[in-house]
Image (cartoon, rainbow, N blue to C red):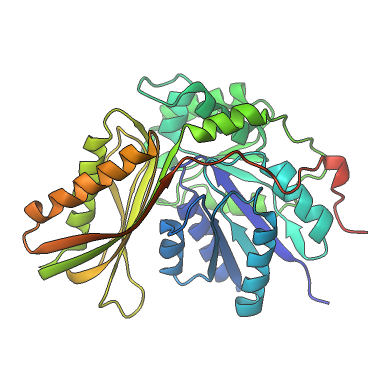
Length: 377
């Protein structure tokens, strides 16, 4: 009989740095000789995260149309498909950034129903440091409404470990002040500061993840009416765009111009995450350019570059903001219309777009700690 596969779930709010951390953990596990399979998750289709992770060579399945909690059977099926194709010894799953109550709806059901197949790691919840400063009153600036903030707080309440991601953006005094404030707001929660970019804290985090998930902690109470209202305040936009250039054009300035224009168009909304990838037609090895914008007051950041200009390709864009979904689409269309004037000879075509607000979460299972023994009898 095969040994149970290790199952890691990396949670956190939109823009917290989950996908980058997932890739870092996957590289670590692969470097130790383990076969790894990744599972991404979103309310819609056409995911930037999936394209970004596959471009790094990781076997990746995606679950669309709802959170892990509401698509639990799809989560199990994704693991089965990865097992058939890649035979992972470790799974790393990244839930939707607006999802909470993962312990009761994912960890405990996996333990109870599939305890012989998976050995569950503790739940890490990642925190963007500047967003956390705003949420906890340490930094001025526009943030989300109370019901969106409710989701952020509930995510941290259920964490086995609070991970201060991207900690390199704060100087040491600010970092220590934020860690202290997190300790006050979420007493008893272990905390760890990491930076994937600099490699700081990663070995401690990876070591911590080798523990087994606690099996006696009660999940926090969640008011599903408030949770649903919080998600419903968020607008979702997933789009695919076709780009063609009369002459080779550098991909990165195109992505930056598109992001900055959308940022201006959405000046009255709070952006949770705007991210995009560009896959060139001429790529032989899956290379992509990628960009991420994690707050309205932030600078768009290139997270991956191409070695050469492109003649054409497919752009995938995901935008999440506390805004009307139609406003997100209109911002994208305005930004696309503006591109040819900035890049002569460039033509763009919106191939697919879906904009919506997430529906009310309806978990497949919701178990207490007592209903989830460590192993299946």
